Amino acid sequence: MAARRPRPCLVCGALTRNASRCDTHQQQWQQQQDRTRGSAHQRGYTQQWRTTAARAVARHRTERGDWCPGWRVPAHASSDLTADHIVPKAAGGTDDPENIQVLCRSCNSRKHAQST
Image (cartoon, rainbow, N blue to C red):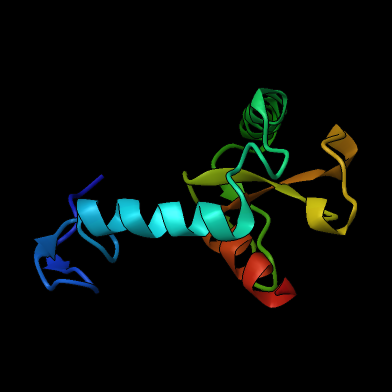
C-alpha cells in the first residue's frame, strides 16, 4: 500500500499523512466522538463482535476472494473488507452471523451515511 501524501490538518494546518487531522487533533476528535456517542465497546462492539466479524470476513475471502458485493454500486475488487450489520445495532440488529454482510470500507461508509 502506498503512503498517503501529506495534507494539512483540518484544525492546525500542520502537514500529516492521516486522512484529515494530525495525531494530536485526531485523538482529541476521537475522544469527543466517544463522549458524544459512546465508545465502540459501550455501543456493543465487544470482543465477541470482533471475533464474529473477523470470521465473517475470513469466510467471505475464502469463498469469494477480495471482492465487495457493492452497496448501491456494482460489485468490485477490494482488499479493504469489513463486516457490516444488515440491520444496524442501533435499529435492534444483533451480532448473529445471519445479520452480518461483508462490504468494503467505502461501501460500508456509504451505507452508514445513507442511513443517518
